[in-house]
Amino acid sequence: MELREILEIIKKRFNIIVLVTLAAMSIAAVFSYIVLDDVYETYTTLMVSKSGEGTTAGDIQYNDILLNQKLVKTYSIIVSSNKVVDRVIQDLNLDKSPETIKKKLNVTSVGDTEIIKISV
Image (cartoon, rainbow, N blue to C red):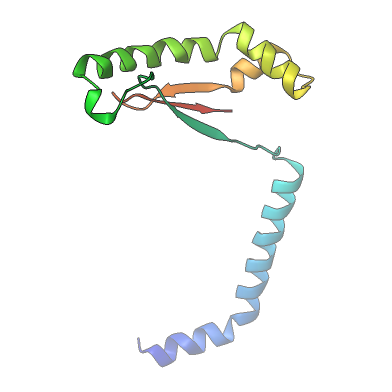
């Protein structure tokens, strides 16, 4: 088959191609508007590190890094605690229950790093 023959077939069936495309777009638009709920997601990343006066990048020891990595796990549990979730609901004037917020809350540590990713 040559390119010219393919173009002739497309030209001959152009109306069908356009109709099928428009029908598929219309079905997708109706489906997304009626069936699917709006879902919004946001996230933030936090870094756990040693703080204090006189601390510079050269002062950080290997043990400090290990401690920070362990603190990441602790802070991840604290972030999803009832006390923190209740405070978020109060500060943002949300009309959601703490259980609903907790189901949507995802707190993870990024590998073996000192970084926590919080997404809702």
